[in-house]
Length: 185
Image (cartoon, rainbow, N blue to C red; front, side):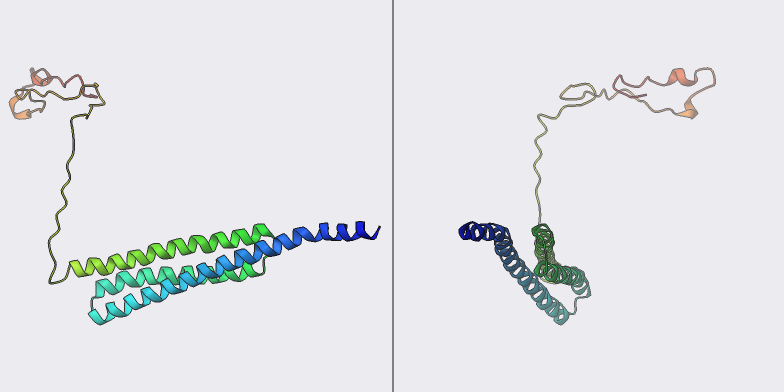
């Protein structure tokens, strides 16, 4: 009889033990991601210090907007981490961890954008080098969606404009060439 009670107590405790282990794992993951956001914030702060020393107002403005966004994400993540530590259900803990995970991803994106600000500023300085991008377009398989032909033929002798100085009331619209068959008019 005592063994049944013991096993019954163990069976009731298993879900709470699993929850505690799951919660501990989520808190550890959340802590790691929050530390990543703090580190990203510090790195962008260093970029801002470098921008101030360069006296480039455009660069400072660009980095400042990214830094403000990262700061907001850091605050949101800290709040979510506090809620994660006190979560009473797995669902609530997962919700808070998702917020931190998303904030970490966005913070990394803002850090990359801040680094692009610095790279863009270095290209637009006095020692800037011209960059050329070449785009090659293959138009052999282009299809005209109006009539299904792969190429359009336009006869150069036809005009579809109307010159009112060259018309009389009697000839009027008769002097205008009709629009092509592919025209919606």
